Image (cartoon, rainbow over all chains, first blue to last red):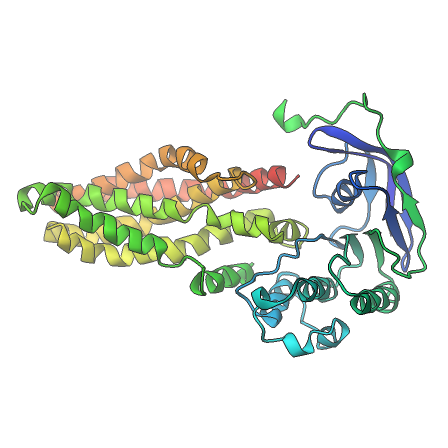
Length: 204
Length: 218
C-alpha cells in the first residue's frame, strides 16, 4: 500500500536522511523514532510529496495520502463544524456524524475554533483526518498537547477505525501510543555529512 | 474549490478578516487629494482619473500579503497542497476572493469619489468600466506576488516592490481609458488593451503562482 525505497531527503539544502526503506500493507502502521532534529518531519514531508526526495522513491496510490502536523489548518474565526465542513467539501465528502463523538467534540460544535484550548484544537485537527477519509496518513507528532485520555481516544480511533478499515499510517511520535506497530529508529539512517545532492535544482 | 472561495469570503467578513480595510484606505486617500491640491476644479478635473486609479492600486496592494500568509501560518496551505484540488485552482480562487473583497467594492465606490474630485460627467461610465476590467488583474498579479513572498517574515515591503512595477500596464491603460472617455476621443483602444492585460494575467499567472507555491512549501 505504501512503499519507500532507498529514500534520501534533504532539509534546507542539507541532506538529512539516506537509505530509508520500508513498506506497509493495509492495516499496518509505522512509528518513526529518533531524537529531535534527526529528520522525522523531513521524512514525513518527503513521503507526503510536499518536497521531492533527493534519491529513492515513494509509492502509493495517487490521491490517497494526507499529511498532518502541529499546524492543523484551523481557522480561528470559523466554528468547529465549519472548519470540518470546509475540509470535507475540499475533499468532496460529507461530514460523518460519528466524528464529533469519536473525538469528543460534540459539546464544542458551535464554538469558534479560536476559543478552543490547545488540546481541543488538536482534537479538531485529528477529527479532520477522519473527515477527509484518506487511506495513507503521514502524522507528525499527532498527540502534542493532548491529555492522557485524548491520547487513548486517538489511539483507539487509529486502531479500530483507520487501520481497522484498511488504512495505513506513518506516525512520528515520542510517546507510546499503545498501537501494535513496529518502530523505525531513524538514527542509523542519518546522512553522511559530505553526502551530496541536497541543493535545490530550482536555484542552480 | 468553490468551498475555498466561500471560506475565504466568510473569513474576510468576520471579525479580524480585514474586509473594508482597502476600501477605507481608498476613501481616505482620494478625499485627502482635494485638501492637498486645493478645491480648484480646473486642476482637480484633469487629474481625477489618475488619482482614482493610483489610489485603487494602492488600496488593492494593502491586503495582498494576507492572501497566503495566514494560510501558511496555520498550515492550511500545506494541507491544501496534499488535498485533491489543483494548486492552480487554489491560486485562481484566492485571486477571486481578493477581488470580491477589494476590487469589486473599490469599483462600486469609485464613481462616488469621482464626484469629490470634480470628475467630468462623461467619465463616470468609463471609470466604472475600466475599474471593473482592470482590478481583477491587480488581484491576480498580487496573488502571484503573495505566493513569491509567502514564507518570508515581513515580506510586505518586498511584495510591494515586486508587484507595483507589474501594475504599470493596468494603471496606464485604465487611467487612459477614463481620460479619453471624458474627452470623448475614443476610449475603446485602451479599454481593449486593459482587458487584454487582465486576460493575459489570468491565463499565465495561475500556473506561475502554483509553481512558486510548491517551491515555497518545500
